[in-house]
Amino acid sequence: MVTEAWALDDVEERYRAFIDEVRALRVDTPAEAFAAQVRLVQEWRRFPFLDPALPPSLLADTWPGPAAAELFHRRHDEWHEAAQQHWADLSEAAAARI
Image 1 (spheres, one colour):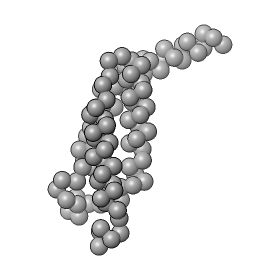
Image 2 (cartoon, rainbow, N blue to C red):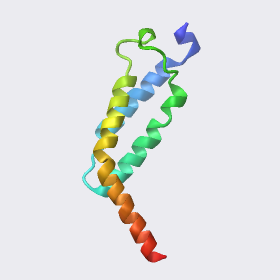
Image 3 (cartoon, rainbow, N blue to C red):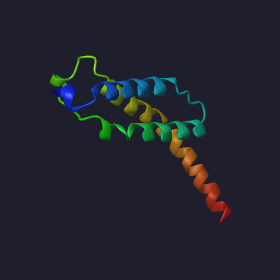
Image 4 (spheres, rainbow, N blue to C red):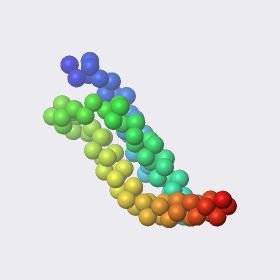
């Protein structure tokens, strides 16, 4: 019934692509942290519309949703400070031009 109601194969594929893409991102500067975090959030915000949030008992043990969520939160936390610093620098520069 679950596979008839939802396209879980597609959702699973998108989670796995998200994991691969996020793992591949390399951040060395505040500007890169900012860009990576914006990309991370933009990609992640699609999942609530795709994933029916079924209970784990209805999903395969290899369902990538929890791993994707853990990676999202870990990377967001890792990049947060540098990304915020870059945003503050951009804001200051913009304000100085006004």
